[in-house]
Length: 421
Image (cartoon, rainbow, N blue to C red; front, top):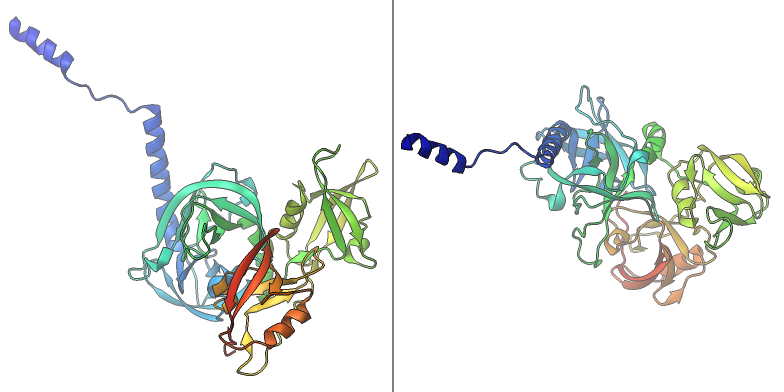
């Protein structure tokens, strides 16, 4: 009897394996989901130079960043299983930092579908695939990082409607996919915010070009050549102070004669409320939305005019003609940018395109920057800046003052030699 009593006491004292809690089950399910999505996604990843890319169709179209692949028309890329393939540049969008390659003789390739970036919300889980610091180049093993969407609709100049994520992104991740937990591409990773310009390492702030923007440009990219962004010429807007009756929208304060804005029917004092179905909350959001459309796209602009809402169809024009650099001869200094007049600015030289692997790239210049001073001299227009550049020599170090997203920055650039065509 004592023996059985002892067994009963021992059985009540021994720990019993508890059923997993709901939280543990949820965590295990999430982990399995991440692993499954990663395994299905990795075969579509592509190594391109020191950066990344992703296959988006069975016939071998590859998305990457312009700053990764824009300096060559032909590439040897590597699939994630180590297979080398030849690829050619099809189309490119320098301002949107997107390039489209085509793998030669491709068929039945593994690929990822494009998702709906408009459906993203802060806090949503995402996965980034890339080659940070080139650490996967030796064994051709891409790196996977996990995080959340930190914010949507960030206006970062040329990254006009960018997705912000805390999924770790470093040099080498550029051009790789940002995917949701359904395995769809919601963005192409392209840039990270650096605490110190000289230290190119992850700070927890990465930016991706949204999938819906890329989808609007894909027909033009597949058609070949450079794809231009659209804009409305002759239009000047200003922010509505938040303490006024209508806090949503921007107000038109100038319409140039015979401009695209006038032809579209916009008028002085119109309050712009929406572009298509996107609310225009402020000045940056207006230009941010416009930056996601190619030239030739037809959009609808909703305005409030004398307490009445009006919808105006507008066909977007190509951005102002790019002023090419005028360097000539083998000893002419090379900056590595193409210029356009700044949006809504009266002075300075706006940067429309930065040539990959150029002095401008190495100095950290970006499309959308405005050069306000060159070597201590105030810049009033593009021809003046071009004349000042021609006075310099190759290897000269020149201080610049630029405006980026309304903030002034000082950058030093070392002028180089124009590369051979």
